[in-house]
Image 1 (cartoon, rainbow, N blue to C red):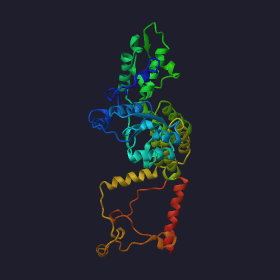
Image 2: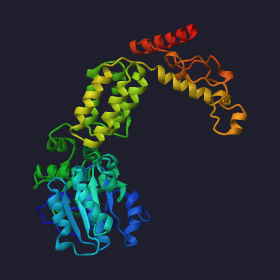
Image 3: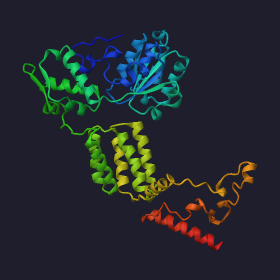
Image 4: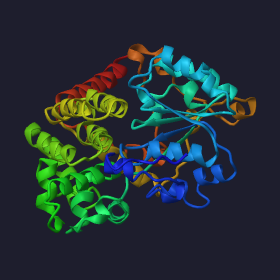
Length: 426
């Protein structure tokens, strides 16, 4: 099934691997003994979903998997396929083979009706579905379809793998191999490509096309920067700048500076930092640095994470911008963060038994042993509160949580004091 590509095709298309052995990267799935390799070696290909960033080989791998098990391959795009067109493809005479492979690119863009249209054919085994998505399928693919597919996550290519892709282009492409091309520093392209092999090849091809073909071609930072139409951003997602910039963003939010927080977040986004990583850190920050000073902060941050996972870039920047400003301008408190740390520190060295009155006496024997005896049910009392001890006797009076001096926590402090005062008077 290997496809021949004309010299007019883009470089990334000309270099598309013709077998699984030619795929660079994804060794956790395609190396000897890895899951997908093991499946095709047994000539077995179940319905599956390939999940990962753009340009890392989802479509190519789907084609090669079908080829490896000798199945016809039919590609559809969720962008231009409606339910009517989908059903026509599934019912066409061209699919009268044993379990042909139907590939749906960007399957996360299928609505529920479109995804449901696939269910019958998948469940009956009339087709083998391979869906490709850049979004987390747990959020973007409905449960009925998801339960019928195995999900495999593809990883962005690292710098050494991008270098191998570029070297293959220089040495193996019919056009480039005939030119005198040198790459000054492969990381220049790798860092800008951000794990995307297609983007790396596009950058190389554009840089070559912009150069004089009658002279030796040097691909350096200036050449790549010109064709990329922007200065290269020195940002290594696995290096010091990655941690320095996320630290700067967090400290800016903690310090209630929305402008600085937006700047550092923008630095990460334009450098290709996955928006889900930023959103996850904001969820942590909302609890650690804001906490009960504004409980809605955690709700908004969590909603932002789910929305970013479902929508992706570039629109995810709007959601992240909203939440980072909200968090930066919110009241701050780390009282609950300190409280759970203190409680865990004590729990590591103290394992006092649960007081009998707090245990459930669910059997007669337990009741005879005193389980539940003396427990006071708060709802039977005014204000749904009654004074009673909840800590082990050895820990009576220990305080982990101390109210911070923000309006909401001080209100909660006053409310608890009022409850205790009312209980004394009743």
